[in-house]
Amino acid sequence: MIVDDHPVVRAGLCALVNGLETMTVAVEAGTAEEALLRLEEFGAQIDVIMMDLRMGAGMSGIEATRLIRERCDIPVLIMTAFDTQADVVAALEVGAIGYLLKDCPADEIARAVEDAAAGRSVLSPSVIAQMMKRIASPATALTPREIEILELLSGGATNRQLARRLFISEATVKTHLVHIFDKLGADNRTQAIERARDERVI
Image 1 (cartoon, rainbow, N blue to C red):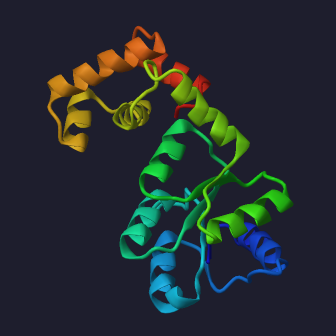
Image 2 (image 1 turned 30 degrees about the horizontal axis):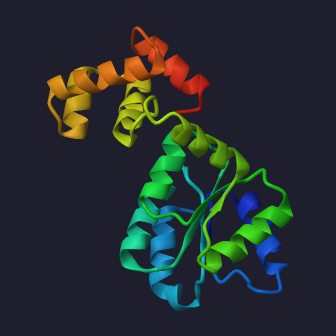
């Protein structure tokens, strides 16, 4: 199953997969919500799901992947144009078997689809570089919660709004901010957001 909100992208991926000797496209979906419905109907025919991350105002590919992995064992391969640590960490945390960028060469995408269907993990080179950076500097690597806070900060959230959104106290928010500033070498929110973006954390 191919899940992407852009018809042209879906058509290109369908042509690529249908050109393989090992598999064909069983079903397409333009939204995450549609993908979940298609899964109920065609689940027995699906060996791997190619999932976009950001699909308009509806459910994200991350949330859809989490729900799919809770319901079945079909591997989900993320196909996206975004390779920030926030997206990569979130996707792997909810159970995606791989994370591939849409600008990868066609033969690399084809090989990744076959590997994912066979249960083998797949990561784009740039994604591997991001994760290696986290491993190489564990003391300064932001935790998933810290990345989540940074993303909310970049949207203009206040400490009180952060606390309500994350169901934590404002004191805990302040503690997280201290750690974030320290890890990024930042003195304030604006600087932290700028450095996080420069380092492709968010």
